[in-house]
Image 1 (tube, rainbow, N blue to C red):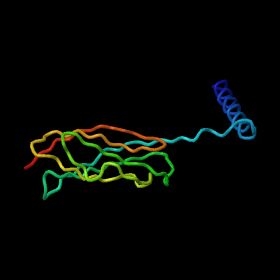
Image 2 (cartoon, helix red, strand yellow):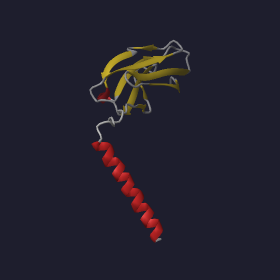
Image 3 (tube, rainbow, N blue to C red):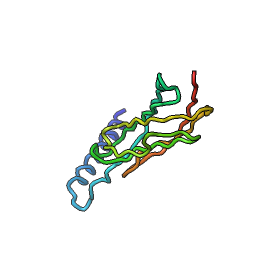
Image 4 (spheres, rainbow, N blue to C red):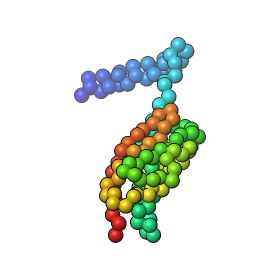
Length: 132
């Protein structure tokens, strides 16, 4: 038990020593900044008046600068029409809502969404259209 404790303490001491040396040594550069944009689940809401209209909320999160300009994009297939497909936002908005109108006789809609700038993501999702 004493040997294990001594080893842990000496390892800790060596780690602290190396860490303080790295901070003091001007030849060791700062670490590379991390940029990451992560997609969150989409929220799809059907309009209660026009059953062919959907509101798709694309959300994101990550470690980009909050004031960084990004482009929120959405493109859906099967003849759907989006009121906007490419919107300039700032990263700290964390979401954009798109209005999508589905043509009649379409049942499954496939969409591609994402944000683009320093770091980006692009994901695909499907949802089923029901007109009741």
